[in-house]
Length: 446
Image 1 (spheres, rainbow, N blue to C red):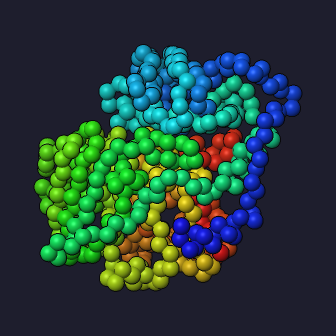
Image 2 (tube, rainbow, N blue to C red; image 1 turned 135 degrees about the vertical axis):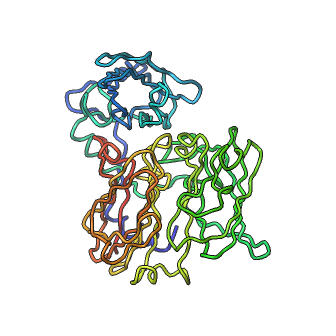
Image 3 (cartoon, rainbow, N blue to C red; image 1 turned 180 degrees about the vertical axis):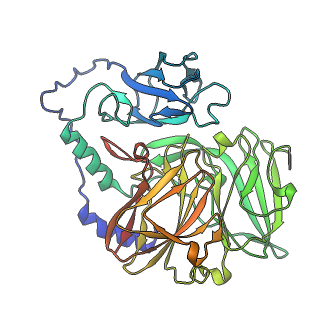
């Protein structure tokens, strides 16, 4: 934990309440008999071209679920869940028709939902089922969780929201975006990256199946300078082939990482060395898998590649000063709705002192658009896709739409003290009746 984060924890501690667990039921409700079998929770799902709604379904682990699926589109669709052992799916559902899918109890974790018809998943019909230990609050048949079976009481809503905030920033195993030091080989900078399949903790007690460079989501930060000769050795420790693409970087064609166009895939147990000179201007770029990328990138095979400005001084690049630098990767799909591989309350805050100039690098390696909104501030958009915007092309915003594959740099003048929420403004990605989750963090100005 950084010194600033430790100071934040000390600052925030008096503001947060530690909640004791309560076994009380809402007024007028009867507690179920001990040992009684629970009825399956019902989940309402709608299908259109090309989306599954809700995109993130929350339910309790360890109990059966019944999905009532309605096709509101104009083409046949299916609804499927990858349980990790098999794919449970409805038959093809004609337009304006419906079907039911029943699944047995599953362990806590995040499971992928999708349409099995060829091409539909790739077109955007993919989502997530997050199963959590304990009761999950529900609103009604149109609630953002998709779970029905009763309404949540005011007390339960208040407790759920407060408990999430009190836990922030919650500790979990693993932290992505950590700098990796290269080794020197006759003047070349050599970076070793290994891609294993791992269990990754996205929020306290919630583990998902992930693919992670050097065991973290996102992978390590690679930082180089223009003119460097770079070698990146990718070792494949997974059960399927993989490959690496350098998104936005200018590299020789045979280093571009596209299977059977520029190179053969890296077989399980094999490795490949990518070698090139850094010719691009300073800015943020990305490396990620380009093999079975819907699964592999969705499960975490991505990371930041920075071409540093001279003297590693981002302030000189943007004609000002930079006191705090922070990277924020947006992700969705099999890992859930995540920022730097974590869901609230396990996301890490951006911590600044009053008067600091805060540089935030934003990158979307998910499959959905995410409008990122900062409370209490306007930020200046100063770079896009690694290119510095000229003074006349820079602009102010408080909500920035970030499409898959895009990168932005924004500057925040930390002039207002407090804890300011920073989150995706597609609300099913961030909040339900039980509290905040997913793509939420905070700018903490001390």
